[in-house]
Image (tube, rainbow, N blue to C red; front, side):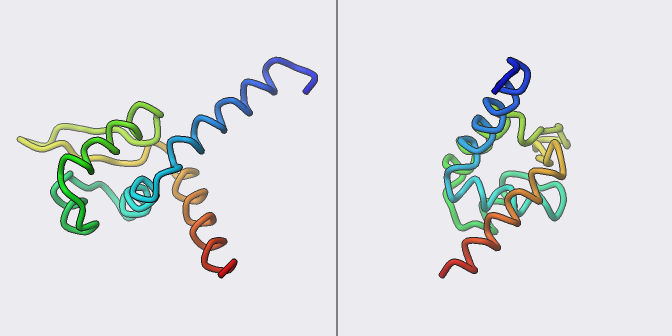
Length: 99
């Protein structure tokens, strides 16, 4: 590393990968790659309790992976960047190949 800016990019990448380190977060990102979803839709699809899904969405939102927009009484979540969907899809594909 010769520049501070270069190292900062590695730090940012590390933070992104930490945010994606939980399997349920990978599943959430995979679902959001198909379009916006509300918490109840993610709960139904993932079969996880609502408080758990909400907690992981909070982590993903804090890491800048997802954003939420109010839709009536619900909040619809979307991915901030399509690159994240590709990173997760590649990681899942690689994990399937390795077995």
